[in-house]
Amino acid sequence: MFIQKAFEIEGVHRIWAVCDSENKASKRAMEKSGMNYEGLLKSWLVHPNMGNEPRDCYCLSIVK
Image 1 (cartoon, rainbow, N blue to C red):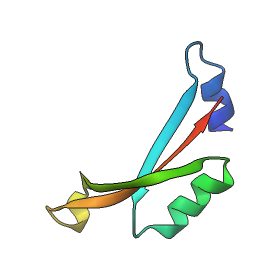
Image 2 (cartoon, rainbow, N blue to C red):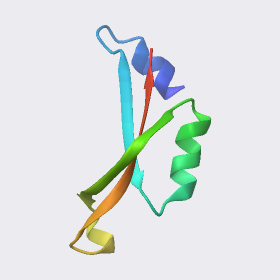
Image 3 (cartoon, rainbow, N blue to C red):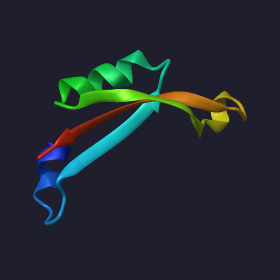
């Protein structure tokens, strides 16, 4: 539903999202919503609740 609504906004042609590489459930949920796996972003994001070191993240996207 969110993706469909986002594509109704003028100028939105691509939506992308990231999740921690250890969070398989989030990756699976994004894939179920129609997003495609694009790659692994090395040392991409610091998750304060998991430590101070940047963590690897999956990048997924969907194009209109």
